[in-house]
Structures are given as structure tokens and as C-alpha cells.
Amino acid sequence: QVQLVESGGGLVQPGGSLKLSCAASGSSILSRDTMAWYRQAPGKQRELVAAIISSGSTEYADSAKGRFTISRHKTKKEVYLQMNSLRPEDTAVYYCKAPRLGIWGQGTQVTVSS
Image 1 (spheres, helix red, strand yellow):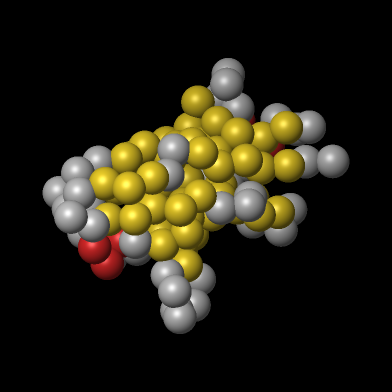
Image 2 (cartoon, rainbow, N blue to C red; image 1 turned 180 degrees about the vertical axis):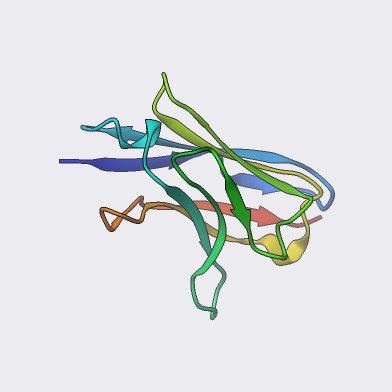
């Protein structure tokens, strides 16, 4: 059974950076499938932040463009979300998802606050 596990969340000051990681167990999907990062802030719907497809092409939400970078390490079977210039409105639980399989990770909390 495939499981996704996120890590790397935490508390950071505005303008700071964090790098989230998503590791897969039980499959090599992270090395080839489309993978995505979502986030859900309190009282808001879950929203797509970034995605990376099998070719390596990437897509970003407007709020993430120029600040966030999604990437993958095929050998380590991990997907990353590098987040720079963080803002208080980036505060949310961030989830990794394998869209083709419909599998979500458990989420990791990111809090941007001074």
C-alpha cells in the first residue's frame, strides 16, 4: 500500500524559508507520476499550490509563482516544495498528493508569524 509522508513544516518569520519534503513508501510513484502540493488554511478550502508532471514540467498557483519551487529526487523517491519569502497568508497545513492514485499524505503545518 502506497503511503505519502510529509515533513519539514514549522514556525517561520515572515520573509523566511522552509523546504517541505514528501516521501513515498511502497511504490516508486514519486519518481515518475504527477505529484502535487496542496494547502488548507483554517476556514478555507484546500487549494492547489504546485504540481510537477512526469516530464518535469511544473505548474504553480498564482500565489506561489516566483516564491515556491516544486522538485523531485527520483532516486530518493521524494518530492519537495521550497518556499521562500513566506507571508502570514501562507500559514496552512500543506499536503502532498498523488493525483492519479488519489492518495494524500497526512499533512504538515506551516505557520508564518513574527
